[in-house]
Image (cartoon, rainbow, N blue to C red; front, side):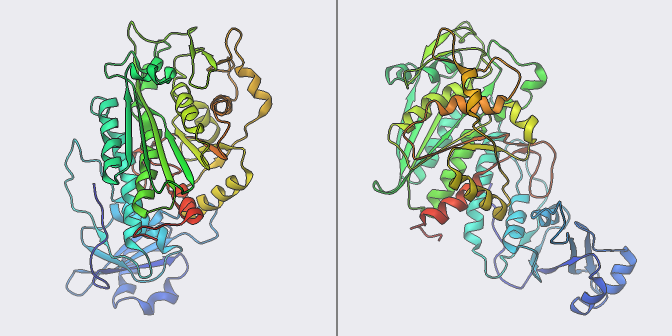
Length: 465
């Protein structure tokens, strides 16, 4: 669903930002009658508090909105997004500066998201004029990328199986004239992608790998790999019913990779971008892979299946090995991989793993700047031995209850050797309860941070600088 800023400048209803304790000093700036409205409504300017000020004819002439103090411990840079669900339809503008107009304007766009595929949107939403000095087109493209990921994740598996997810990737690749290849079914075996085939062969729709490349050939190589498990039953190690309720989101890694690719290609980022999406359904049938099975991998390592519900790392292993063969400057994978990551950091703070200290520091910096939080976790070497197989090179699980997110990251690292830098994101891809600019449902995590970092690092040659 496309979302745009309102056209025009200075025509919208002014929104005045205020912090608690500023009301008396700020009154002369505001329309006549505001003092009476404040008194009548008992408006105190608390964070998130909204006051719509009527004029003499009863029409709204201004809005007052309470902001948190800059030093507040739990300050939410997206708090302004609350206005989208509070104000009536119409056009609005920022009359004074918020703490960060760019994040506030982006929050407005992100809060305007509605998933309307199965239920039509019933009410018009308020629109915002682009705050002065901001690149509105770039903010709209960032929002479009986020909405792409949200739409893909929110769509249930009956309409977002491997065929549909492939179609979404192909549509994006064709839009930007990327070089595209799709490998399906038994062709995966012929092209040495046995783990992707093993995981997905039980599904009604055959497993596949989408591979597209965009950008000038001699530009720095940046490769994105996204886990595309369109539904995860757990396989023969079947999940309990509660564990399957939102497993449509298990392709959130692929959705995130497509969202970032969309933003980067639209911006004309000066990189040689490659996107690899292993796409499967982890289904149950007579052909399903089993606990105890041993399969070869593209890298040549044999993998014993300790648990069929640890399928994501298997399909990523083959895709990462393929990506690593051309030694990219930067290799990133996105995956809704472990419950252990949620236990450690909760749903809103995705962990990432890398051996590149400089890159980790940059990501931490950009995460704060764009309000897209991530947290570095350790690739703790002593745990790597927990993955050693007894009759195979390695097992897909550690066999113990501890450090599940770390051992999953260590498993994936075994398939990466040549990439100059490698980062693994263990995402949740879901907002359990709505907050400003983050509606309940599918969410695009870590992508805006990486977009800002990659543009700053490599520059852009497109229409958005």
